[in-house]
Length: 207
Image 1 (tube, one colour):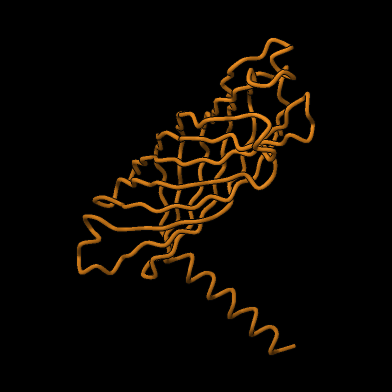
Image 2 (image 1 turned 180 degrees about the vertical axis):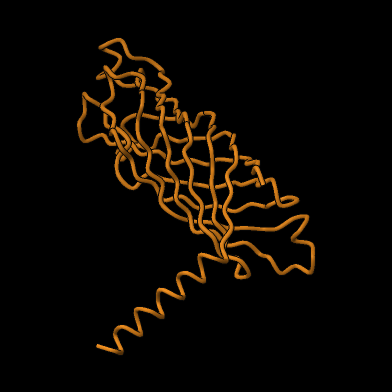
C-alpha cells in the first residue's frame, strides 16, 4: 500500500512538473485546400479535384526543452470536387450534369507536433516542424442533396510538415484523408465517396 501511494505521488509530481514547463498560445489560421472526391467504384463516374478555402483558430501547447507539443483548432473548411454525373445515363436521365460537389465543414484537428529546436540559434528565425493526428469534421452544409447523402461527421487522418518563422508565423502543408465515407450517391447506395485533401495554411500566433 505504501509503495502504491509513493508511485501515485511520484506520477503526480512528474505530471505537475511537466505542466509547469509547458507554454500555450492561440492564433488565427487561413489557407486553401485542393480536394479529390474519390469514389470507391472509380469506373462508374469520373471526378476532378477542386479548390476551397479554410479559416479559423489554432492553439498549441509546447513542452519546454524537448521539441514535442500538441495542437488543435476549430476551422471552417469548404471541400469541393467536380463530378461528371452527366457522363452516365443513370444521372443524366434525372437532369444531372457536370456538378461541383461542395461540403462545408467545421474541422477539429488534434495533432502531436515535433519541432527542431536545436539548430544553433537558427530556430529563433526559422524552425522546421512535423505533425500528425486525427481530424473530426462536422458537416454544416452540402450541395446536390438530391444526388448525394452526406455523413454528418467524418474522421480523417491528418499529417504534414512546415516551418515556424520568427517564433510567430507557422506555414504548413499537409494531407488528410477520410477513414470512413464522406457521402454516397442516392441512386447507387454502394457508390461511396471519400475526401482526399492536400492543403496549405498560415497561422499567426498572438505571442
